Image (cartoon, rainbow, N blue to C red):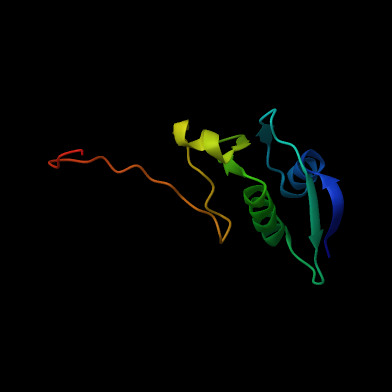
Length: 105
């Protein structure tokens, strides 16, 4: 069971890294406190999905990389060309589609 009361977001990121074995690069602007109450046990995969949802609720997103994943404010992701994590069931994925043979206006 997972009960987080007023936990620092960076502390949660450290915990997720230990549990999942994932490496994270954390943007200096990542700050906040987390409150989560769970009445059922969750496995490591569910824990990571919950983590992604928590980040999203706080305005952050995980940009997956080969060896390291970056945790950035959502506003910064439009300039990043790497894969944005789609592991959370409620994540939003933005894709740029080039326009061909159509007037841009």
